[in-house]
Amino acid sequence: MKEIYLDNAATTSVRNEVLGVMNKYFQEEYGNPGSFHTIGLRSKRVIDSARETVRDIINAKRVDEIIFTGSGTESVNLAIKGISEKYRKGHIITSTIEHEAVIETVNYLEKEKGFDVTKIPVDKYGLVNPNDVEDAIREDTILVSIMYANNEIGTIQPIEEIGKICKRTAVLFHTDACQAGGMLDLDVEKLNVDMMTLNGSKIYGPKGVGMLYKKKSVKVTPLIHGGGQEFGMRSGTENVAFIAGFSEALRLAQSERINETKRLLELRKMLESGILNNIPKTFINGHPTMRLPNNANITISDIEGEAMMLYLNEFGICTSTGSACTSQSLDPSHVILACGLPYEVAHGTLRFTLGRKTTKEDIKRIIKVLPGIVTTLRRISPVNIDVDKLNIHGEKVYVN
Image (tube, rainbow, N blue to C red; front, side, top):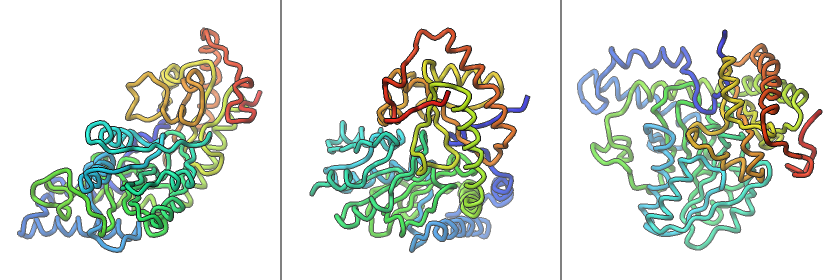
């Protein structure tokens, strides 16, 4: 039985081209980039080249604005905690649907360090209103952090507009762009961001590597102290293989994103229409148009998302109920709840995130298998929600 992997928002496989770039830095070109002998200097040149590649892709002005880290989460912490350490006190703005890397970091700063935090609510599609951000800005606001695209429902935020507001009000602006790395334009000048986070595992690169773009004028206190690598921002011997792999993965993803977007949109439309037309009391979460092309977050009423996920797994279909970073929690997704879905409805959510290896045959198999699973689970479910009375999303939510 062929396994069908539709959890690419959690992590992706490493592309063969990326692996090919990485391999020689494990056993052949293994020098410490901080060493001044020939092998060490060759390693340094690899990192320098990777940094230049990333700078060109995101349109940064300087190579020393690119800081390589160990993950997207570390990059987020470096940005948010690094700014908070500089200011020591003040007001931080974020949204209610951020990744846990942001949510837990600002919660820590609020509870342990005395910072004031405002979490901007979203609309029924998970969209942040830029006017709400502007209204929340105060004299003591030191940072706004709004994600580029959501990891659970795929909604793409109006980052460029929010960035203009932050620039006009002289407030620093960070965006978590980990989910956007292979799907959206990453031009930091166009987006009006002061800091931007990316990681390797979402763009068919290696796990364990991330990047923080930090505008040169932005002063950040490092989290890790030591040998002063990464321009003093992230001490520790650089992971040459992973950095080289990250830059190659980002280059490939960005060069292919327009054509891949078209392909993924066609597959997603096929998946969503197949599910909605064959399973009643079912609806799509996220924005109808401003959504990542590979993201299909679907709520199927009356049954638990975890149960559906486990049944699908028996058929070799790998999906999720939300963020992999909170997969141990039995509570409904904080993202789905923030979009206004009732607690009992939010429990029935599945996230399908398509990828490079997804085919039409994969989609057809899911459409064939899932209705039977839903029928079986609904037969034994004590829940029977009247979704019309709930008026979810303010419109008819299922197709008979």
